Image 1: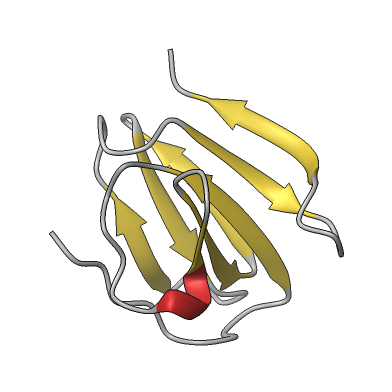
Image 2: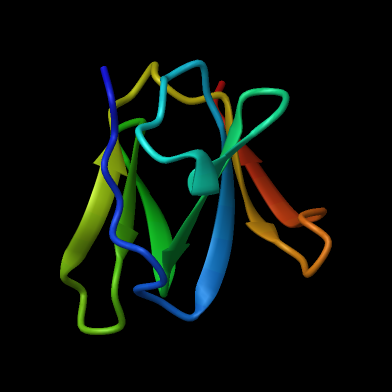
Length: 85
């Protein structure tokens, strides 16, 4: 399944580790990581939901399709990490 993400629609850059194929090389790097811009991310019943500052959904990943999500620093290193159980 390919995922489509709006570019730079948020203040925070989130890194997601997943095996899902992404449609845009800009958001994918080696090691199964891709990056999403959103104001916040929430965990809802195991799914990742990316939101703008008004609470509108920017994108989502279903439960079971991701391994970790983190706020990415300037060098793509994790600032804080959430992993699925």
